[in-house]
Length: 131
Image 1 (cartoon, one colour):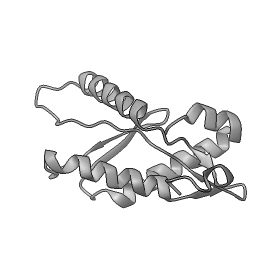
Image 2: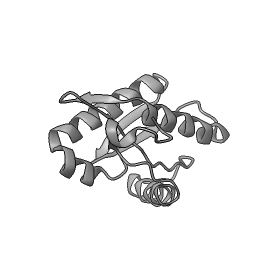
Image 3: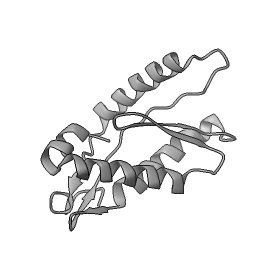
Image 4: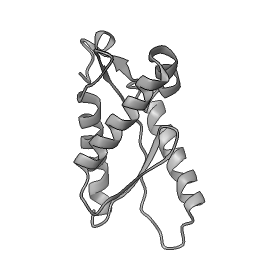
């Protein structure tokens, strides 16, 4: 979740927890049943897509980001949107979890630098391209 620390600081950790639950729910709804989804720390999630061709992943991630960024969630009678950054690569047979997480983290940071869509409340998000 983009700018998650600032979101927590501004809106409360309880609101941040609601954002995480919202994101987890959208991931479950949007991915195939055979895909593996896990929260791997803080505001980071990992998804292993079984049966998805490598050339299809980029489009799948763009669609997923659009769903996440355009689906508001409510907390304490306010509506919020969240933005995400992501990275992906093909899982290799000799990958270790540490190597995979390292590589994806680098790709995610590169994506985050190129596209900033922070978590916002409804008032801040009005007129934005993602609401």
